[in-house]
Image (cartoon, rainbow, N blue to C red; front, side):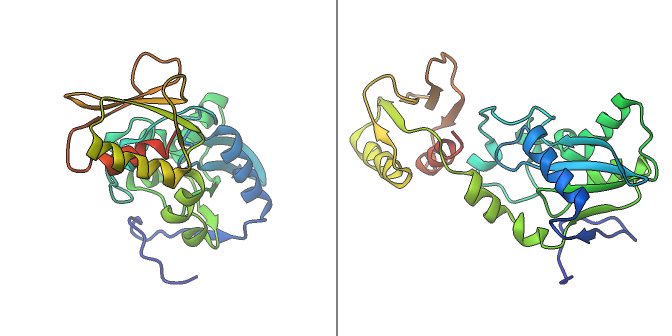
Length: 238
């Protein structure tokens, strides 16, 4: 393997690697599809003991796919591995490694001596490594190309693309309105007056974004010189 500069690695430990088509990595990939509640950076994981899967889980608190969530870390462009406190869905307690240990506990199986196979990420943060080691997990496996396959840029290229088609606007002045419309062009969004997939309202507090049929904003962008770029980062998550 190439010399990879991991954001964190415990002393005297290292990741292990298997091909993407390894049977237990395929199981981890399936867990990613079925269990991960984080639609922006989905991760799946399985625990394997005596050549059998004893527990499976996904990040985002095992909520499964389909939930719309705007992550402040993405809105604010925070560096990888930082700012977990900004987003309750994506913070360390909701990571796949912690989730699979909780799942093992619910099932009443002992994780000590098991191996973990993780699909969807290329490293584990300090709290997750600590939890795995405390539980007696033997080795943590990722795909042998995980640092490329699951780099932040590559994953976001696939997941940060809006599924919405229409947006309505309220209260925007002309200069700001033109900048916002350029974002619409980038994402091929259509502006319409009402019954849009998303409604964005400019107020003295900032820009509130409402999903169709909802009365509470899914995100409030405060007033700043980064308002347009942050609105772009909200829309690309919807």
